View: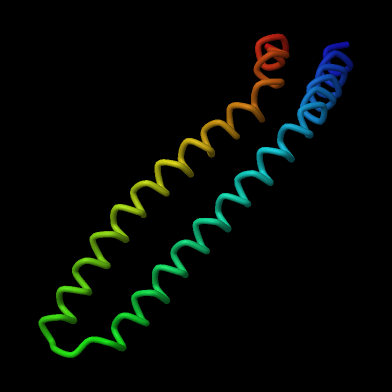
Length: 109
């Protein structure tokens, strides 16, 4: 009897989780789109830096350019990390909402 109840509860939880799949898919696609934009921005910044390095005439200008690039990249990285962290937290919350709402773990105990 207990095994039958557990099996039914597992089926219910699985169907509720699969019901959340459209949100999961949308959130995942949005996360991947944002990730691609971040990669694109970082690639462009690196290529711009390489192009600027080719025009450097002195070691001091190179150091100044390198320092400025490193500062900008550090700021950009911090902003990107905050964005991705927020998106990841929202994704995890959205995905787990149906499972938490079903309260499956408390009913099984």
